[in-house]
Length: 549
Image (cartoon, rainbow, N blue to C red; front, side):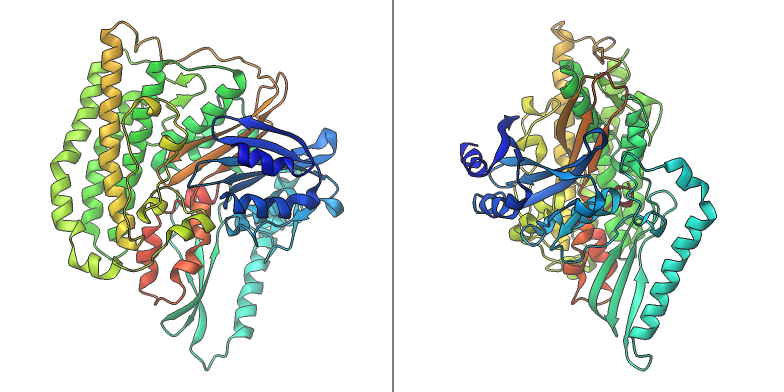
C-alpha cells in the first residue's frame, strides 16, 4: 500500500490514510489534479473504477464526490474524495471515463441524480431517470419529492413526449427503402422490470446496441434514506430478489462498522449459509434462463424444481421464500431454536442438487446445440474485465481470479477453505459452466459453515437460540463506511454516511454489477446477428432489479 500512498502524496491532499487492509483513503484538495492522479494510479495497476458516489452536504454547501478505484489483480484499492461547489453552474469536474471506461455509466448516474457535470465525458446525458426528473437532480437534499409526485399527469406527459420524439427521429434518420432500422428488444417482467435494447441493424446484422434502462427506476437509495437503520434492510434486499440475503449482509456490515459492533461467530457462519443459499437460488435461475434463451425450456423446469428446496431453507428460517428480511445490523434476524431441524432442511436441498448434478452435466452441459451456439461466442478477455469492470462469474469465466469472499473476507469466510473457481475461455459457454461450478462451491461452503456451528454448539461456545444478534445503538454516531460482498452476480459495494445521533442513513450508495454488465452489451453484441442477442444477453446473468434500483 505504500506505493499507492506515495503516488497520492505527490498531490496536495487533506489526508492519506489506511482504510482496512487493502484500501487507501485520500481526499484530493484540487480537482484539477484528478486526471493526472488517475493516470499515475493506472500505471500502478489501479485500472478499474467500481463506482462514483456523490454525497450532498447541503449544510456545508458542497457535493463530495467519492471514487472507488480498484486494482483487481493485486487487490490494492483507493477510496478517493474530491469536494465540489454545490451551485450547479460550478458543480463540475473532469470525467475519468476516457481513462477508466468502467466509470462511464456511474458518472452519468451521478450527473442525473446530483447534477455533477463531468467535463470530457464522451456522452454526458441524463441517464436512468425519466424525463420528468431531468434537471431536477432528485438525490439532492433540497429536492421536494412530495411536490414532484403531486404533478402526476404532467410527469406522465413528459415521459410520453420523449418516446414520441425518439420515434420521429428514427423515422427521419433511416431510409424506408433500405434495410437499416432500429429494433426494440428486451425482456419485460412485471416483478424485475423491463429493459430495452435499441438494436441498430442492417438486415440481420447488428451494427450497434444502446441499452436503455430505468423504466421502473425506484430511487432505491432515497427510499433507504427515508427509513431507520433496521427498516432500511427492506429497501436494500429489493435490489434483486434472486439473491436476497447478500445485499442485506453488505448493508449490515456498513452499519456495524460505523457503530463499532462485532457480530457473534454464530451469526458470521449463519451469514455464510444464508448468503450461499441465496447465491445458489440465483444461479439456478441463471442456469435455467440461459437455456431458455435458446428455446430449451426443460432445463429451466429442472432448475426451478431444485431451487424450491433451497427456498424451503430460507422459508424455514425466515418465514418467507423471496423477501426474507433474514439479515439485519447486529447479526441475523431470527434465533435457531432447533438448529438440527433446520440443518435437515439444508441437507435435503443439498442432496437434491447432488442427485441431479450428474444428469445436468450429461444432458445439458454437453448439449450439442448449446455448445455449437455458445462456444467461442461473445468472448471477454482479462483485459476487458479490468477495463469495464466485469465482476463475479463473468470475470471468473474469463480466468480472472477475483472474489470478494477471498480478497476481502467477511462474515465467516476467512475461517473456511475456499479457492477461486474459474474457467479460461471467457465465452458464453464458460459463463454457463462457471455458475455450475459455483453452485458446487457454495454447497461445500455451506457444509463447512454447518460443521463450524455444530462444533461450536458441542463445545459450548455457541447458542443458536441466543447468539443471533448483538445489541445495536438506536442512534448512530457520525461516520462513513464502505463494505463489499460477493453477490451472485459479482461485487456489491455500499457506501454509507451517517450523521451524529441519526436514526436513518444520511447517504447510502448501492453499487451492483449488472450496471457494468449491461453497459458492455454493445461491445458484446455488435457485429453479431439478431439470433445471437438472447443467448449472449442470457450469458451475462443480468438482474433488471439491480439496474432499476
